[in-house]
Length: 213
Length: 338
Image (cartoon, rainbow over all chains, first blue to last red; front, top):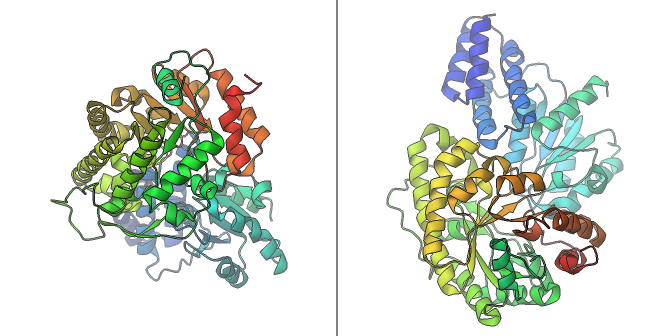
């Protein structure tokens, strides 16, 4: 593997330079580097660097969106069929619940998790609870991520664990985040974790994976 | 001292009979008035009636003619959907993919979209309240309006891909909000709050705010000042601490600060600017009156010696807030804790 080229890919993603990121990824592929290696040694380190900035409170939507766009385009290049064959760590189902048409936060979570080798099943925005449960029963995920910008959806969030219990899916972790939900607590929302940011979600999942759960 | 005098004194860091309270009650007033939010945000008379009812119920120091964040973009051509008990959402942006925005016409507040209804509410509120209670309108910040015209993702991509085009769009947005703000003052508002959530450092870096948004906010506040506004109020939620030092330069006289900004940060970074904040909005829905009172007393004590403070929430009080919690905010400055 060409370390210099891989570092250039990481730098281009962090700069939010979409064209340069795709160019660098293409060069790596042409040089015989596998798609999986590019994800592990190019995209994941870029995600980690963004995560570091987030921790330092220098994080803002503009930078993460631009990096996210670059990651998305690189993934399209690496997996033109849309199905990443890279070994994934776990499956996570994500949604913005019915009544909430804001999906920016959810899309960022998708990008962060995908870039960290999670398989993400996106139920979209304005998602009714039955549709979410259908996806959970089908995909058997490790966790559900719910993003919420408006307080209106809180009564729906509170129902998710009970709906899982009825279906014998109590093992599925429920994570909540977004401007409205992050003001609350796991106890009040009846979820397992309330995340401050998409990376906070990632840390929680990684810690659970580390515990072998 | 009436409410308007109390707020004016707080802005000048003068002594007041008690700390003024501006509860950011917008859609919550529809609940108090017993009407669906979809009606509240579309009818000026309904909005004014609900605001007056909420004022009589809570007895705080200001009323608002605020519908939602989509009034300007709808007037400029966006298509909205109105769920019965929620704020409207944008179904189609005014500037969908592939459209050009050269030569866009600035909407006329007297006839475009819901702008006339918002003006009607201001006229009714001012007629009913005179100069006793502050009557407050609302316009978006230029960057926030740009995101409402184009969509957040496309606006942010444009910031990197074609900054001059974004600047052009923001100039248009600036003209829209200035015209609407002036119409609000003419209709009876004592002042118009500039609501600019997309300019938060959670969304754009402080350097972007300085280069793109600050000069346009200066234009907006200069225009409002020249038209005789009682004060210039900037409302940027989220972790705004890094941009607070620019507020004085923008011409801000009331600075909203959210719950994620500490009292120390706000007071230090805004030495000559009246601060309003910063109780966590969700506390009004999830907490108890005792919780709200505890937070309020903490703030009142923290700002006691400094003055220049208006007790408020960090952002909008959610529509589904418990009325007893809003009442606890309104009465806190007169309570025993003081």
